[in-house]
Amino acid sequence: MSREIELKVPLTEEKFSKILNIISGKKTSPGLQFHSLSHLLKSDEYFSRYKTHEKRIKNNELRVIRIRTEKTVPLIPSGIDIHGDTAESGEKAWFCIKRKTIENGIEFNSEEETVVEDAGVLRSFFAASGFIKWFEKNKDAFSVYCSFTEDSGRKFEAHLELEKVNGLPYIEIEYTKDDFEAGEVRKNLEKILTNLGVDPKNRDSRSWPEILLPDLC
Image (cartoon, rainbow, N blue to C red; front, side, top):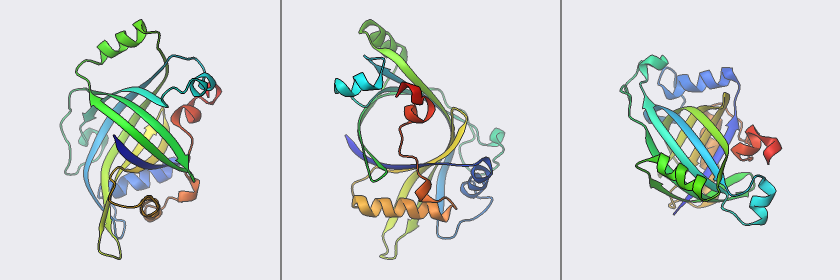
């Protein structure tokens, strides 16, 4: 189980392109370093015993019961001719459960996750157990690690995804370690966003189902 502190902010297409140029090395952002850029296609399937969000809350169901499938696609066909992942990977899958809270617009997740050899077996189990797939989101994402050095000399590194989620452009940035206090993590995540020209005040604290399918939530 791990702590996850996350911020996500909607973007314009213009801002999306500008940030892609920065994380791919075509342009620079003073004070920030990037490494391990990859292009990922992700599919998240959410399962529940209930058809409405109200019933999930009433029956104290886990906030997230999810199967994630993911594969890496080459960067060069994406129009990014830089050092990084240039070969396509086979599909991988994970099963995840989350307990999630929102504090001052910042998402805190307590997460448990495990690799799944065959996601189809889990889908069959859910169907036999009365679970339904009530929501699916698809991400076309550029994943990268972003770091900077604090005034104190400590290095802070976060995981950043520049993504289109069911076609909507967003930036997500998260920190999953416990070596910084939550308040400092929040400040540092906001600093990275600001350096990329993104206003942290525009963060979206809604869950993806609330964003993409508000009528179901």
